[in-house]
Amino acid sequence: MKRQGSVGRSLALVVVLGLGGSLAPVPAAAEEPKAPLVEWGQCPDDVVAEAAPTELRCAAVPVPLDYADPEGEQIDLTVSRLAAADPDKRRGVLMLNPGGPGGSGLALSALLVARGLPSSVTDRYDLIGMDTRGIGHSAPVGCGFTTDSPYYSNIPPYAADDAAVTAQAKVAEQAAEQCADNDHDGRLRHLTTANTARDLDRIRAALGEEKTSYLGYSYGTALGAAYASMFPERADRIVLDSNIGDTHLDRDGLRRYAFGMEQTLPDFAKWAARRHDSYGLGRTPHQVRASYLTMAGTLDKAPVAGIDGSLFRLLTFGHLFKQTQYPQLAQTWQAILEGDETALRGLPAAQGKGVDGAPSPTDNALTVFLSVTCNDVEWPEDVSTYRRGVAEDRERYPLFGAATANITPCAFWPHAPAEPPVKIDTKGPRNVLLLQNRRDASTPYQGGKMLREKFGNRARLVSVDDSGHGVYVLGDNSCALNTTTRYLVEGEMPTKDAFCHADERALEPRAEPGAVRHV
Image (cartoon, rainbow, N blue to C red; front, side, top):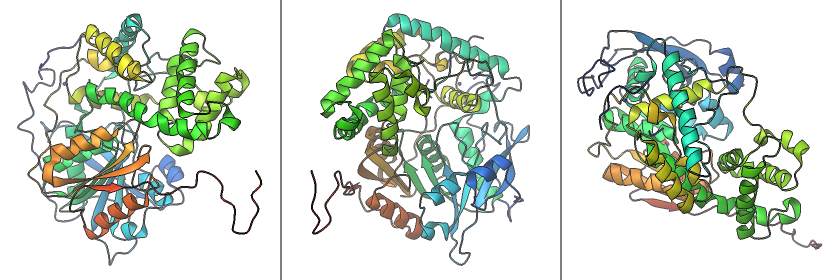
């Protein structure tokens, strides 16, 4: 199925939707109910299991599939609530989003509580999680990807040369056609960041709230930025954590992943160099980086236990998200260096895609990711554009650039965007707190600076001298934790941009007072 019409990828479509252009006539705000319209009940079994022992309640909120036809087909969105622990202190609702697009958020409140979300927050807010449209329990969609599908990751494979880009173009085109062929009810075209932001406002209204606060991570920052721009009068306290830099993910945003890896791998390299006697990856950070490049090149020519150079680079990228994953990454590298196939097959990090043709457990997430990113903004369609980008980024970002600049199914998506991406609105209240680690593989520091500039005086940026993906609660920085908690609880926004120094961590064991240290 070929693209029909074009107005000019990102991880995001005119005539195909029958609207003849933009969605300017779409109503911005939901009707205001006089009382909550939801009926809370038992959550789905998988959510209960994931959230245990947290007492979550769930409900369905109907929203229009197509906001240009608000009285037309409706879909049900499943939302969850962890009620405020102290009704006397309750000030409203705090909507949560884990990112993606494609991530389920129904149990996110339980995760945050388990990770130490302060009781001063849980006392004051109903924590509202949700599966946004198309995800999980909210009118789920699927392209029909299987465990042996050649398209199995949101990030394209590393392209060693022009021929590899051409080969990946065939995979990307096939994936786009497969999505079109399996879109029997025409829902995929309605999965956009703008529509999801409209859904948030419908949920707010259904909960009987005049305003909503919001905490979003990763892609959730794009959704939160869109909501704060489309409904500034409805947005209360907004926290955007690990920012992609706009209200959508485009080709430039995806290419920034490689920049993030260049900034973040040195942290792992330092960690591994201090543990050379255990893992043998290099005595200096420079040697560890050299080990990565050597292993990647070797695996390009001769895969080990099903791990080729592309998969090796991808799993390394994924394990830079959290410092707690460094030991497992070091195990994998060590097994590759030693040619230990038995050890590799036993490592979760080294498990590649399947070969049995069964439905892929990531089909839903992959489908939503593609639909939103391809629908949000126009992507280049010419394969040569991607060849040039790969060649440029292979040199600029040798660790991962030839992957993130590679071609995706958005180049062959069957629909052009129905409306422009949401534009950041600088005229609303100063209520957007941006949190950003200085070193983050998938949302590098640049994303936080970009969104700060776009929001202008509406926002303040808290820069954290730390590594990894996720700052508030999911990170370990006390300054960032305290600053964000004060904002959510007391409404105290920093008067200017702030910098949080790294918390002191013991890199080597210290002798207890009076003890003899044996070397």
